[in-house]
Picture (cartoon, rainbow, N blue to C red):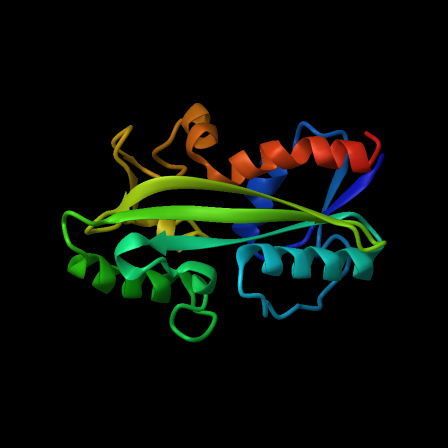
Length: 203
């Protein structure tokens, strides 16, 4: 069976991407499975640059096809911040709890008529020979004044991200399986990437 490396150290992403890719006839490996402990600094200025940097690095390191994603929360009233710096909004790689505490303060000051926000992601597939493909996905919502109490590990901002269309938070504890697909920005990107993976891995 062909192998595909999920190139992330974020356990939340590993879990989610494993579920989203479960229909592919491939053996999905984590960095831990591949015995890779090295990290790569994300120096890109865009989600696409960062996702390609990660996918290429780990593909060449492992000798396997690899996928990596980069994305973030974009708050319209903050001119798209934190965006590509979502995990390092505080100037360093903050914990889930630190980011929730910071967004709690920000959320209180957002104007009631301008709380719109997006989750955007770009997922890249890289092969050991250096070829790459990238696709994107997004979901629109609003920033709630107060977060859900339960934290989704690896995804702190989802506790604030409210979907007015269905009157629910963008959180797995609130969404049905169908809603998780319909409103999941990563799922939307994966759907675009699956045919590329199938073609390139000759599945």
